[in-house]
Image (tube, rainbow, N blue to C red; front, side, top):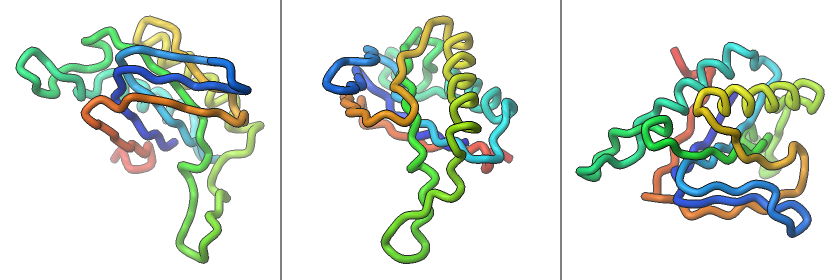
Length: 150
């Protein structure tokens, strides 16, 4: 499982010109799921995301987590995070999980993150054409791959 986290002061996702999910201060979480991902990947990743100290404390140092600031999360499925670009100019998405595998893991990820941070997460819609807007605070953007956790 691969995520890109963006610390935001606000973010929203629109589907067919209507707001589908929006947050204030917190994290925009772009999630890419591959065939080998499991609930163990979700559990590890959710704990990492909730506790990652990337928010400013009173001295302006990145010492606070999403839990510490009681921030929000907007989760967007993004299979393109698994793009392979080694050959040619057309990316291959062979490692991205098919919907029958990815959708249950995506839903489980959203549920687990919501339980961990103590509030529902906003989200897009799996497979939809989405327009995501954000104000990246910092900017702070971090990528995490569960296959590189060891």
